[in-house]
Image 1: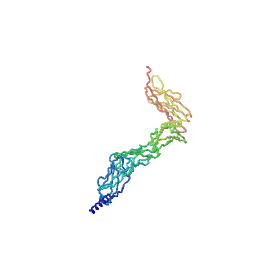
Image 2: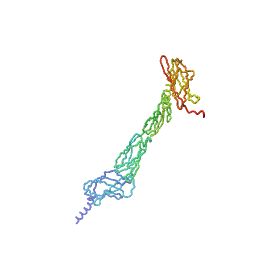
Image 3: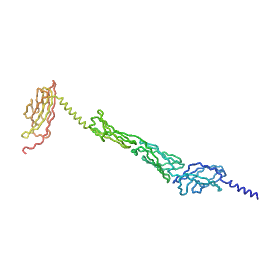
Image 4: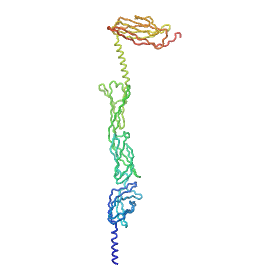
Length: 457
């Protein structure tokens, strides 16, 4: 009996030692976090080795956190299992920052091990880092990045990137410690008037029900870029437009220079008026200067009216031609006609021919023809024709001295009324000069006849 009692005492003393949990617990994960307003647990990863007999273990805590996995986990003797433990608060939990709590691992015979877990609960905005490269007014794109600083899988992320230069929305996944590069295409028209410097880049992030807004500076590098364009149109009135556009992102001092010769400048107009002009030889330089902002243009319009010099040139040519004609002609004939009042209502005209000798001439014949429908009144002045017929008059001179002028006059009439323009043919001169025969003609003449009132009225 005593022997039986002794064995029972020994077994009772040994039982807790034999059945107590004997586990080696190794935490593999680190920096576990929980993000406010995101319905995702904090996750811990363990290696658990069973140093005792086969067990069915389970995790629990007394502070109102759900722990996963739920239920019993079988683990053989000497077996090592990798177990992912997730915790999630039950009810309202507003703590921000590090948080520690005790949890328990319980065996099949109610023996258990107490352990401590620590995690950090953060706001969504504290989980990310954003940034960008620099760019200038010639850039067609810019690369941004967003980095997950935490050991937390956010899954699908919606982000809006916006600034003075662009506004774009992107969807992407973002795992633990992952960085995403975002390429944004730029439209130069959106920022052509912006100065170089630093601007804010804003990023609005949405994950589940959580929202956050971050900002970081964007560097818009200085770029001096002025483009010049010219447009020309018109021939007689030629217009030239010179335009300078600031396509950079800094203030630019621009200068426009136009050259004109001393003749064309007299027929040119400018808009706006040049700031100053300088002459060098036969060339006049006109200069405009202005400071223009990014996106601004400075335009100068120059109009040259070629009609004026063309008219002047034509007049000069005509005058020179006339002068040359008269200077080259040894005998100049000038013919004119005037109306004569006669009784009976007949139509009568007085014709006068001037013959001007510029050099010594010999054997001169001046011939004038009569127009149709008229007759000659055979009464002449001092210079009587040498030959007369019904259609032709002729005056002959043996010689004319240089500068000598002869005036020939005669009357023509018609009993048939004449209305409108009455044209007379040119007079013709034939003369001899230094043994050579020459000819010349007078100007054309005409007379406009208008209705005359009846004398009886």
